[in-house]
Image (cartoon, rainbow, N blue to C red):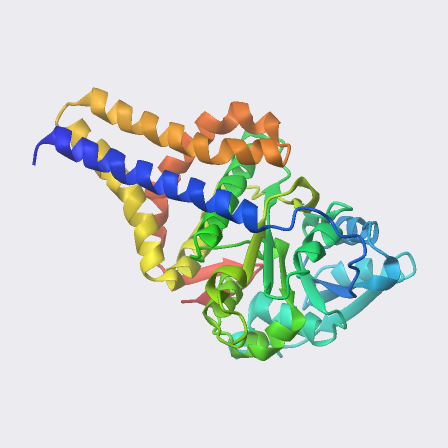
Length: 382
């Protein structure tokens, strides 16, 4: 086949993917309830699993305690998941400072089967939660004062069962800043998928669910175990048929908001090895998406195929054009998000970040030959 035709096919495939995600984000923005109703104040529970988080947990809990939401209308359920450090001691020291704090302490090896790892810790917290809605974040996250109010607002729609929002990385070094760009980019792709009615991902440290929905699904006790429990829950809700009154259920059960009021910051990976392990875990969990995962991988590989074929045929200008196309398309995706959530300082990092992501795409497939995942000093197998 003519190299110029292959170049054109590669370019069209990636450009088409970009346009679809742009449309999806526009559609999802139209579906969000962006006007805050301050009269809507249901009782909510914030569930925070913590395993060996002595250095992070106080920062997280204090940020939650400062939420601009009536203190008698929310509780913070912190789950100490068999920590071997001083996590529990730090939590206990905050009991009198945070009156709406509820502590769950998991000991021993009670978390088995579908309840291994984080799903088990989350389930333990939800079991004792009294809220109508469950808001979930992680112990290494910082939550803005407006987070609870903005997320809860979306549940005014009775057809909304799951609300996702953005998490970014608190980045200071170049490596950490690149991670921040990546998290925002990944959230934007995931949001576009929801807008198109196709679930492709979310982040469990900024995820909220209607408790009655979670219970109808059987919770994590019934949802098959994976190393990406957030995607498993999202997928289970997307595929459920428990709300027969919802005529357009496939498009209205899940909302994905992009709003500076609901952006959470998490800690970055400190080492490259930790970063690769994180992406391996995401890749393994993403296999559950089936054909959607195949399409995402195919659209990226088609561009790489065009680049490699151009290089081996000494058409260096075509390879450069495809790389430029990739950079321009990805900037087109992420730039409106940076403006909307007010992370404009990342604009100058977009080009180097995208180039870095392209290289990572070539590394991750080789990590999947091993079926072992190490997370929070726990080993899981596919």
